[in-house]
Image (tube, rainbow, N blue to C red; front, side, top):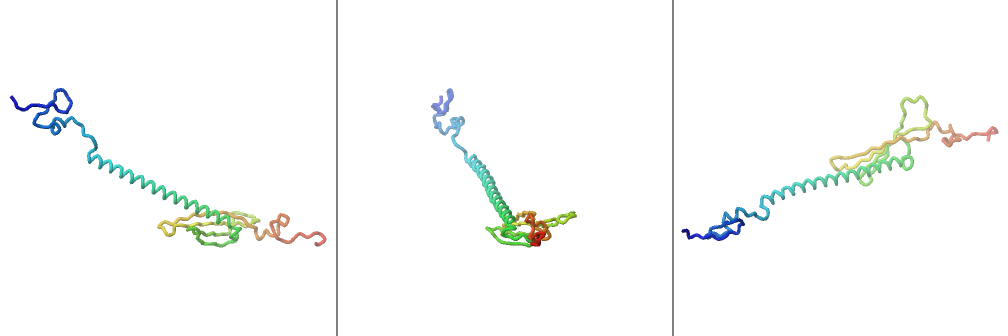
Amino acid sequence: MSSVSSTPCSRPGPGHRAPSNKRCGFSMACNMGRRQKGFSLLEVIVAFAILTISLGVLIQIFSRALGTTALSGQYSRAASLAQERLDSVGVDIPLEPGSYGPETEDGFSWQVTIEPFVPEDVSWEPAVDAFLVTSMISWGAGRNEPRQIILSSLQLAESSESVGLFPDLGLGRGKQRQDSDGR
């Protein structure tokens, strides 16, 4: 006969017994069927690595989006300034051949160039002078990639030959028409 008696183990199951000289909590037979609660250290490290990589990608996407939004705002401001400069020709800037500027406004440098425009293959003399007006806006010169936007427009002015041709239409400042009695 054996002097070893058995006590019931905490492991469920019909007739499962652990030896009495060992405690049930340390017995291999008792721990085999029990499930551990919680995560292992390896699982936690892998989860943090995945989270870190995901957050790094998201931060990179957001920083590029912010940079693109800022650049888009700069292009909008430059296009608006170029249009303002085109609109000021004939008002603040005389409609004569030449170059005006460069001046700086809010970090944007602008220059307006006015050149005579002669249409090709025209057999007749036009009644108005045409000018090619170009507005160039530059910015970002301190960075490694300077940017610029150029807008061009064709603007018409009274021709020096047309002065006096159409006095009744108000197109010229030529001699006034005299009546038959010389007045």
